[in-house]
Length: 199
Image (cartoon, rainbow, N blue to C red; front, side, top):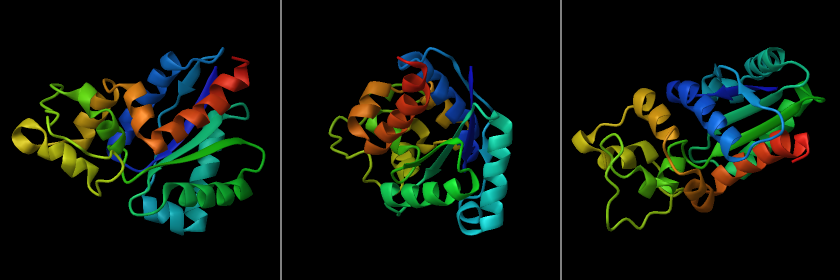
């Protein structure tokens, strides 16, 4: 069993990311089961801009998962380039955890962009209606939560309730095909869980 200690920024991701990791475990399994520990929630700006806070949370994640574990940082990129910022965060994190298994994945714009990437698979789920004339690049909308909200019956989207529920339901292959940042998460999964175990 490989413990996975994750660092996230939203209330919804605290419940949603372990669900996603369990689904990845079934979709792309390694020889050993990846055990998703309860995520550590941080304030994005404080985590990224205060070095002592950054170090403290990384060391906490390292302590939670132990020497054989995997530390996974998943944040929203917002207006930053996911690849550039992730590389910078990874470089800084390596200074504090030089010998640990570590990945940094930034969802392009927001975590919810992964739902948009697989939006057809969510049609009819929890009041979401996929617009028939939708021609949307999953990683373009600045306000992915707002896009979902506009396509929900009643016009409400709850990060705390809907994010874990959508995470349990959306088509992983659709998300993989339509979202570069989701492919990055899958690549890190491949390297740290699947390939590590000889699959």
